[in-house]
Length: 421
Image 1 (spheres, rainbow, N blue to C red):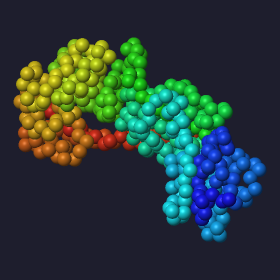
Image 2 (cartoon, rainbow, N blue to C red; image 1 turned 180 degrees about the vertical axis):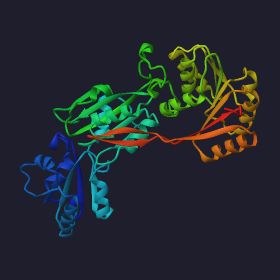
Image 3 (cartoon, one colour; image 1 turned 180 degrees about the horizontal axis):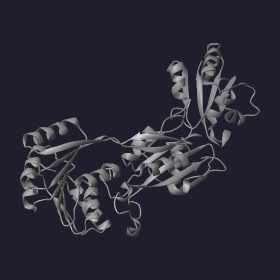
Image 4 (cartoon, rainbow, N blue to C red; image 1 turned 30 degrees about the horizontal axis):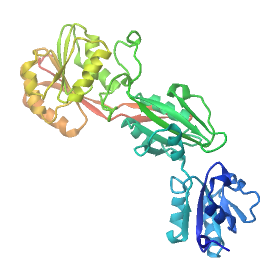
């Protein structure tokens, strides 16, 4: 007797690496009664004695035409797929080609379910990224956002070792354990944990999934091995939900040069964020006093952590809103403005009054509107100033190739009190 599920239905059956053993009795009966059995060579090999006509799904466009003709002829069709057909699978394409009421789905466990159950980690909050036949832009965004759990569908180009290299190229201030999950559900299943550095050059089974689990700590630090300036972004403590939100290394290097720092100065870093600029100044000028002004509690905590991490006791975190908090600080020789919280005009006015006669002010802007406000105030107050626009791009590995990914453009306004400078 023919199962009612087969009557004029296109049955999409998810199957695991155990083959027929992964199917329950009801689904197995549907497969046994098929007159057309479609799937990859691997899927079809699970049913060597099946009497149905076989259709190997190599060219998907041509296969869809064949399937439609067979379906319209009334054949009992079963399409075999891996895992859940509606999880980055063939189901989406079939729904575009056939009426939804003509299709019945019979999912197996997805690779994602298997992976997280092997890792014994809840996965309802995982960020899922497919790098299978796609660019790595979505993955880059997830890493820059500092997502706690990232599951990545790989392919022969975006392999686990290629993804590890992408992560290292981004130089983010956060650490992940890289879990490689190969042949999940098969007799040769293998689940291993790597550091990204050790993944480079490794080779994996074609059927693999990569899971990244974020660790709370940043990378280890050896003070004796640090450069004099230009610290890697990855060494700083940063915002847990926005690890990439800091003044990037390339921009910091330019800011340090434009500030024209001298020994024994008072320096204000307004809107200090994580304190990355303040740390660099304090390391370069240990006999200067660097005041890192930040309005948020988490920002001040990060500044304190980075001060201690880089051993710069001449860095002083100051929690408060500029310009109000500035009155409590000694007059500056140098000022860097990284953020203003909408108070740019008032901050610049305080700096005009308080900055030493031969002082230097550098302000960084990511938006045209804030830059426009700054120019208006500088012109009205007779500052001498110039602008410097920074457009940096970092190289990223893409399999055996290299491409550039731009950092957000930043414009610096460099202003001087002394007219002859």
